Length: 321
Image 1 (cartoon, one colour):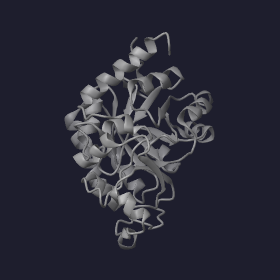
Image 2 (image 1 turned 30 degrees about the vertical axis):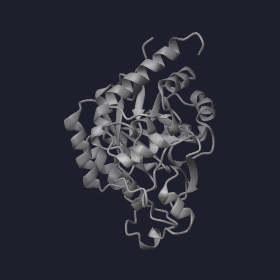
Image 3 (image 1 turned 90 degrees about the vertical axis):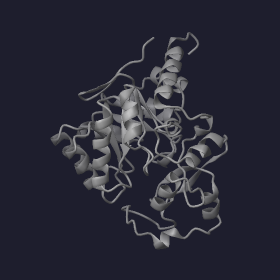
């Protein structure tokens, strides 16, 4: 059984997989381009970058691939509109936006012919998004890594939202293998968004120490924290987390990023994410999904996508699904 295509507005992906946009500098041009080359939708994480840096990443991805490439931008970042304008001016295919809601983004994308895909966690927000012109919605549950907008399981949200909108519904949160993909497609999702599995890829820009933490994690390795941005965040236990919990991290007092519209300054999350990407586990915070511990090897994107699609096909063809 072949997997369905994923149609978002005028875009048609050969496989129904969107690679998650993971900041800061985890999802960059090489990763996005590699996923796009395999028929999925590659995503560059814009949060934490300057507008010119994001434009450079988009150009690089275009040099590497003719496939579908988008950006993910947190609405909570203070330069959201600059990043959004930079992306549409550079001719990005689609914009995925979460951690807040912006009515302006729909008009900005519509005027440039760019597909807009909000991340939602309720049927009400999904319907509003559709009414404002969303080309699809990402339904992200509590199982996701990074900043979370809900405490509800993804499958509950999918069941709630799927029949309330006509646009494609993309499931996200806790999807790490092909069986997971098959299950959510069978449950009615039009596609999936997955981030953690692509962290453990050769093309991912994260340092080897970052990836090693994923590979060595166990079922009890992920915890929820109160992020300075005002949202709950799912992270992996490491030295930085221990230091922060003991009160020995004071980077918020010295933060010069001014990157978030809202920040408690309990610590500088931007600095912590930058350090993690560089492999500094003493100073770095590592986001990961609830089921990241199931990932046990680093592979090329081509190998990952091949494994995912084959496992999903087998599940959908099985009589025991």
